[in-house]
Picture 1 (cartoon, rainbow, N blue to C red):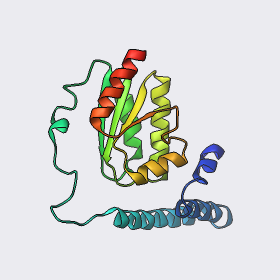
Picture 2: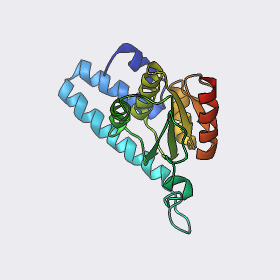
Picture 3: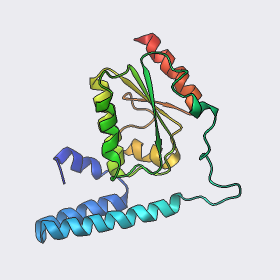
Picture 4: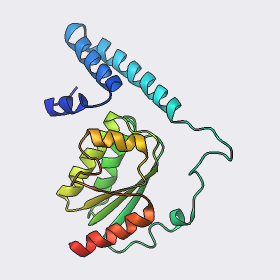
Length: 191
């Protein structure tokens, strides 16, 4: 539960997230805050486990995209000054959403372009999408452009629901890291 604009934004999320929000809100008003928190956390945990089960792929040759490739080993070495890169790995959900904002705060002097590599993010929940939205807003306030690289379909869909889709003017998308690097150089040239 939070400010009304966050509440309204959550109403645009998938039906399951909306149901958890409305049930928790209803229990808070009608029963008790303690009961509402217990039920809400339990339902959110079950929902997360169900989504993770859907995101798992089983196939020959082991998990895909787990091995570090050449672009991972020197990802910072080839960046021009003023560009910073971060890789997010694994599901981006309520339990880790705050770490993204902490990363931006720890940078001190923000870069002019930030690349978030997301090819290893199979799942993004509502709080993760809101954390990314807050990250983009903070980066903009600091004068930095944000590029998302390699975003998978589920996170891409969730970002579209919070107004951070591919048509958003708040950030840019790149299909892979090489294209993100080229876009970063282009954005630096415009500034």
